[in-house]
Amino acid sequence: MTRPNESPSGACPIGVFDSGVGGLSVLKALRAELPHEDFVYLADAGHAPYGERDEAYILERARLITRYLLEHHHIQLLVMACNTATAAAIQPLRQEFPALPIVGVEPAVKPAVALSQTKHIGVMATRATLNSTKFQALLASLADQAEFICQPCDGLADAIERQETSKIIALCAYYTWAIGQFGTKPGDIDTLVLGCTHYPFARDQLATLLGPEIHLLDNGDPVARQTRRLIGAKAKAFGQGQLTLQSTGNGATLHHAAQQWLAVQNPVETVSV
Ligand code: DGL
Image (cartoon, rainbow, N blue to C red):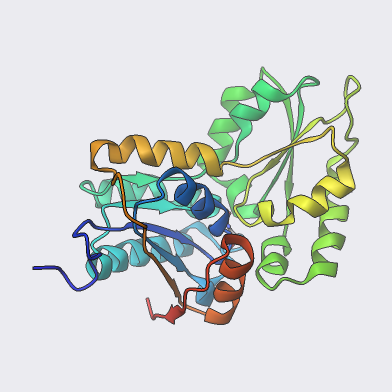
């Protein structure tokens, strides 16, 4: 017998969550890599943004969402499509839910070191991600390989969530100016890490500000490949994957973003978690 939220094929979906629409940038890569899988995407918009909250709050939200996705959707794997939630919660939640494979997202600083010629790298992320012990340890492990200029971008994820175009442009201009001199000469910053899953949706604005020579790096594709590796032989080989969209906040925002960025018209269910 099919369980209530199982897909018609009988396979359990992959759960994906973020504080809002940002994780759609990861979901897009996941659906391209695993086109036959079913996904349930939960935007915790009723409790966003996470980036200026404390670690205990973010961990509790991630815990409640994980439990909800397991109980209501019987997910086979969880993708935390949020750098901020990954930094605060992935280690404790892997211990609390040992049977559930969990894939996280972290700022692409390692690929940035490989790509940068000048070895001067800008990192845009939320304040909570940059301050986390997990990110600080990652940065320390690369400290002898490049210079990193880290910029907390208060308000940017929220402006992207609300699609406030002029505010997005103003914040991108301000934060890239604050990071320093971009370019390809020695000492210039030639690579910018988009360390929040919302920021790829400001990629065009950032590329316009910085020019075509600056590398802009996010983590959607590596996360999708890692998810495929973990699913392994259980990955479905045919059929069209189903997508369920849910939000704890304004469903219209997620519906509009999914339409714009994923070209899907799926309805959004409002849930209380
Ligand atoms: N999209 C999230 C991230 O990757 C966080 C945005 C927020 O809620 O502040 O960090």
